[in-house]
Image (tube, rainbow, N blue to C red; front, side):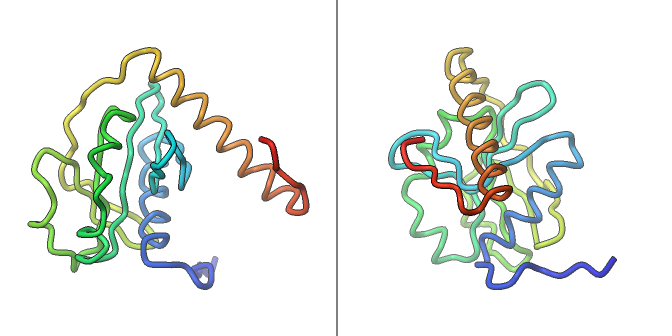
Amino acid sequence: MNETMPPLQKPGQILARGVCRHMLGHGFVTVEELVPTSGLRVDVMALGPKGEIWIVECKSGRADFMADHKWQNYLEWCDRFFWAVDQDFPTDLLPEGTGLMIADGYDAEILRMGPEVKLAAPRRKVMTHKFARHAALRWQSAHDPGLSFSGV
């Protein structure tokens, strides 16, 4: 099988693709660009086989990371938080106490696990519901591209 990248992807989207592939290998399913609450949009949210929720923020370079002033707000929406960067990213910029993945468009590798801070049961239920709806809407949109999703 000759594998090629989808055309016109941004660097962060390429990293997200590799992250999603890697997470599947660990039994996690993923969605991209999920909104946990108004004003926040995570790059990748992963749902594990035991219901664990991980967030992965993909950073394409120093400027992309420096412009992200909201990442700490993501911590309350997941059990573990990770950065995904390419092999040339200056990883010394990334905060201690966060997870780290090195990724490309085909795979990723977890270099450092983010600390586990378990979500409270009500928050986990909300996030699992959002994950399911987001995934279902994405599937339906891909399956029926002409369908309007206004009011959903």
